[in-house]
Image (cartoon, rainbow, N blue to C red; front, side, top):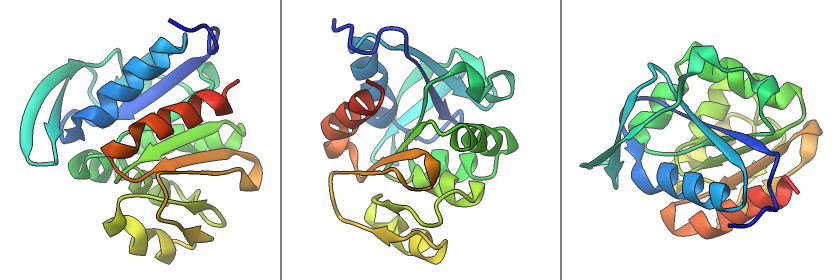
Length: 185
């Protein structure tokens, strides 16, 4: 285990179902491997249901907290996994929106993968940012006044006082996890 992120605390937020398994599990494992403390908070707390490719039910993962019980001030970075149902649910959840805005307002790192940037649209924080996502989310991001959308495995944008890290799909997870770790060093 590395110690490069020792002392860093990272919040991963999800709904309680529809989460793309690897987009939750792989960042938890990788960032813990870099020495960070990870907290997984879900809307209701407790058990979350992951899926593979949005359609095949996979394993359950226990969350550590409820979204309503955590505060952005206690963390250095926020990670938003994808999964169509997960991201669509987060974009409608008041506590998810509150947390996203707390991280942005404090100038922290926010990372979202696949459909995860949907939650950023509804939080009203992507205007002027250049980012990537799952291809079908592109039009929504452009319509929400993102500065640009790129087809890259990871895109980091530091405009407007906070750092945004985005990736497209589970195959981009190694680059996504490394970008988060580098941004926190």
